Length: 212
Image (tube, rainbow, N blue to C red; front, side, top):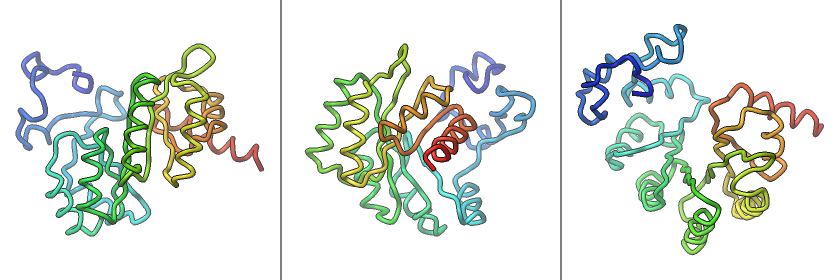
């Protein structure tokens, strides 16, 4: 219902798994954002791989839900785009299995929750040697003049990930202020997932310009 606000109650009650590909391919998933996005459709994976083949400088995050990893690996290899994929999952077992199937690809393991929950999950990853993780994303929220998890936690995590040569990414869930981006980069964050890409890109450029 989020991206199809005008859908019928019957359609809103359905999940993606209840639809045929023909039905999915006809959905207008852009109109909810404004008239300039009307007519955007859900691409099939083969079309996405074809775009990657045509735009050789690009990589893509594949944030999976329910998927046949073996089939994805086969299709990526057949399209010769394996090294351009970054598989994203909150399940470390899935990340490890994917890396075994497609060792030439990259991975992102993402996690949200309270600082206590994140600390526990990081300890589990530590015990596993952060196996198969190339990038790690933590969900961050602005709370008053600070963040949760705390700046101390974020900075400590950043140091550990740098030592392990793992890219440190955050999803700044409710931050649209460039000053927040500056503070997060001061804490060691190297990459951002965001709902405000223009603001974040400008902030990153300004941050490094100031450093020069």
